[in-house]
Picture (spheres, helix red, strand yellow):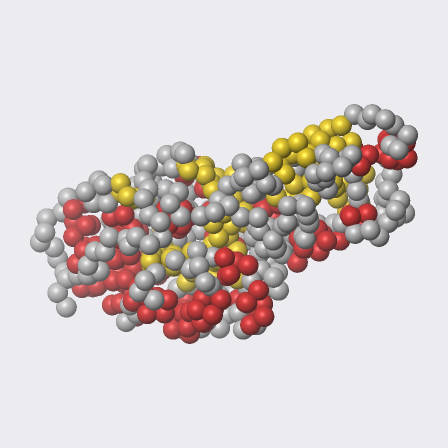
Length: 497
């Protein structure tokens, strides 16, 4: 993957002479370009920012570029006089005066420096390393133009749990990565500006506020480091309300550039909302009134989008959200409170040092068996048929709730909605690990202990997706005898019909 000079937020190409540098100022200036872009993507912000901008100058008396990237191309550091800073309006050539209007708080130091700059033969200069996109004024991360960039498109119906997933993922990602010795993640500053208030609101109230439907979420830009591997991963939301707008989809940078599709499946599409109704009855949490499309309709829509507009798509990471609802409502089908089926347990340290391919296969088998026998849906096959056999497909399940021990006398699987970062959310980082693996940032390990690096073209070792496999694995892990009383759970997961 080559480095990119496309803004990870607005998706526009940034020419070498266009890139902006900025530093904090003591006064605030109207910046409608930055404010408008952030607000349209769900960020609560005002119009003013304490910033002044600088343009790189390579030649002439004002040459200020003192460091470029490893390709001797992109400027990464300027050295310039603070009095040369420009307000947003001055960048557009709309204002000669240093200041944007009556509401700006003028600072005598800046005004004096600017008025006297022509009289000075020397002026103290400062080094400036913070950069911004000239098109949206979002802050570019430090490694921009140096590190590779990978793109993930998130697709799911309204209320499928995309925002809730991102909030819970980045609330816990570093703790769980550390627990499995798989590196660390750092959010870019503007992504943090968007996501951190959502996390704080979630921890205080348990709710994730609705985000704009017009442009989707602000792209989440994170820098992932794992050993000697380092890259940016950018998550783009595809607004469900906009999928029928061809112009929007054709110009959506997340779709154009995505190598992986993070497809969020709401299990209520299988039952017209029955899972949500059962959860609301058990926990008293209100659910949004929804008309759920069928799985076939959803996949058809996603397939058309990717066929028409996604030229670089290599893998589909299909995630069944709200597994708490599924495992509670159909607890008996998964073996109840004592189940050792992989999908009923959390990951703990099962992906220690590598992504465990056996664990991924067990999750896929558990989910396929349940969907096939309970709803006559072969989801893995449907995804392959929709997107093509040449694309890698992963099937996972997550929940933003925490599995808790069942009370004495209660034989059912139990979850509780917990908001703290200290409470593990059910398999919440597994999709992130799989995405990182498909980008070659994390290695996988197979049944034999052989370590493998994936590039997006290597297939996940296939296991027979039979109903018997999860049951055998459960018996093995639990140390049970092979002879077992047969009930509905046994029939569902591999016993005699």
